[in-house]
Image (cartoon, rainbow, N blue to C red; front, side, top):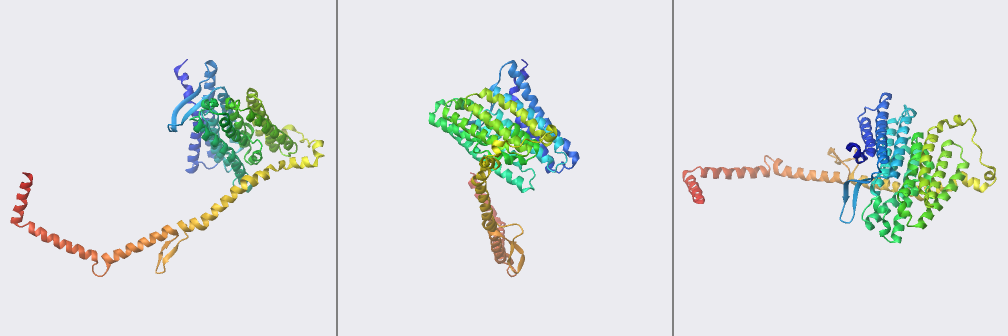
Amino acid sequence: MIPLLANLPEWIWLVPVLPLVAVVINAARVLLGTATGDAAEPLTARLSSLAAFSGLALMLAIDVLAIIDAPPGHLRLAHWFGNGNWEATFSFMLDPLSLTLGTLTALIGWLVIRFSANYLHREAGFHRFFIALSFFLAGIQLVLLAGNGLLAFVGWEMCGVSSFLLIGYAWHRPVATGNALFAFVTNRGGDAGFLLALGLAATWLGGFEWTLLSKASQISVVNDRLLVIGFVIAALAKSAQLPFSAWITKALEGPTPSSAIFYGAVMVHAGVYLMLRLEPLLLQVPDVMFGLVVAGALTAIYAWLCGLVQTDVKSALIFATLFQVSLMFVAIGLGWTTLALVHLCLHAGWRVWQFLVAPSWLVITRERPPPPPAWLRNNQLLYTAALQRFWLDKLADTLFVQPTASFSRDAHAFEEHFIDHAIGQPGQGKAVHADRPLVIVDGLPGRLLAWASDVLQRIEYRLLLRGKGGTAEKLMHRAGAYLRTLENLLEQPRYLMMAVMATFVVIL
């Protein structure tokens, strides 16, 4: 094999980095004011498309090498940080699972970017959309290709931030910003589970590597179960399984291409990937696997019933997506991981196409959507519950969003009524003295500075400016007279000879 091709897997870090390069360049163009008007749109789209396509080409090349020889497996590229008890590294996992999903994601990402270039033409937030989408591609590839949980968590959070930005794409609409906040806050519960699992892994196993987590039999069954539960909570939240299902319908507020790649094809499957990655760990705790079956089955029933009463295309598609993803969790809980992986790949490819053509779906089908079945319409309680989505939206809003909003309002009030008064606000100052209207201060630092200025002014007045000559001037004149007297003495010959003789004595 050609040596250059043999070392190609070591360049895997370019797959998540290339979209970040596109983010930096496009963001710099926006900040410098060069990305304005219709003429600037093609360059933004081409840079994002080139970064995505380059990552796809690199993934395909590594796939070919893996087929010819063998998958590279776990690659450690550099030390990140750590201490004597644990270590974090820049490592990547290039096994069949990561290579398959990484290649599929790179292909879907490139296609969605190409589609978006025309779909979002002349949109006010055109450049902002591509910046957020490229940032998401970098994050999701980190999740899929990372060789350890800590690096995957970085990508996990990048996906969350980009999701928040794209749900709130139409930031001037209160519904969009409210839905973005709803989705963001709800997903933080899953992030807490991920962080808990990482902390336990560092404490009990001494690292975050996926290869190390697959050997968690070194710890007790109780500790193993706690470790797995943290990752399971993260997976359930990211894939919108019960009890975290409410956020995903709010996320449809973003543009259709972002809905396609985020909640139809890629990010909604991140929890499924996490469970597939931790399969060796799950097999050691059958009760947790049974919990996945229960959560997946309940979510499937919820999504099926809610999907029957939807009246718009995107809502119907999102509940269909939720139903399919829940079946993947059921398959993983039953130990059918290969089936879950095949299901994931087929579903991602099919669903991204459905979401992208959603605006034209009624034209394509040329049929009216079927009404809810008679057995559901005749059951008033169940029909109402399905219409209200089993009141999960209201429950999540009460438990997660309202406390967060209340805390934000309290923090704002504290800042407005205490912090601003303590440190001052620009343009809100008042004159310290009526006879000096130009000296305007506000807040404690301003008052301290004004006080220090007054003190220094008094000192200056007393020492230098009072009368014909201040105290300092008189002292300087007196010191000058003493120095002139000493100089006159030293100029006398006898004192000069004494100084020369003293110098010789010292030298000898």
